[in-house]
Length: 347
Image 1 (spheres, rainbow, N blue to C red):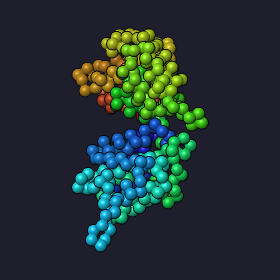
Image 2 (tube, rainbow, N blue to C red):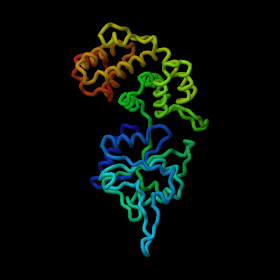
Image 3 (cartoon, one colour):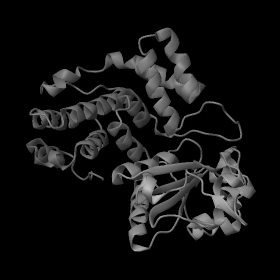
Image 4 (tube, helix red, strand yellow):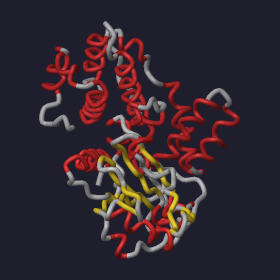
């Protein structure tokens, strides 16, 4: 399932704790696709804490607690990391990450916690949702087969990659527009992992964020840039990205486009993707300023300049996701919509 849909499901599951309808959710997927980040974003949207428990690093006693003697009885000291209404608040998310990498004795200790929301005398507060995530067995990670009793305690979703969702996330998080343009041009490189070859560095949403950081640090050091990009996303993808970045000196004048001048779209397809991603970035930076409507109008007018109408549709669709419905009030939007004929704007 695409990340945007999973985010909506997790939102509803989180709110379902208030009505007694919550079901623990298990997210499956290969490394680097953003499983943990999807959960973290739910916490941010709702302004609630996320307690991230890495079960792969746990012993059974870390969950159950440590026994101590109280007169003639043995009591259990409840681990401080587990949700507590007084310390952590009445609502939140208990996130059991790397659950498929936990040794069987630890996953067995989690059975009661996940289904019954309790462990011995400890009880998970009513307003807390339980989410988990892990890699699949074919992903060459340290994984154990999930026992049937544990699997039956979750609803299960597999994280599918979706470039539009990643692009929307990338613009919101100020990822370098050159990487966005490159992945629009080469969408198959968003995730390219072959477990049979067991690569060290390979393209994933996580490693493209690393490549973004490399561009910021080594962009002015041409002799270092290629090696650092390859260290993030692998040899082949690093070479492709470096070549893409080097070609951008042939891009048209973006400032002239935003002034409304008549600028032709480049013939090279890779440069068209770069121009489109850069213009979306300019639209985002103009949002909330007095010049926003004017900037949007000039970008919409330029969207008609691309030889392929689909390129203009991609540009306007990404801009709509980034700046919102205020774009509809710009007169140039209606003119652009008429120009695309039978091509529909997608959400």
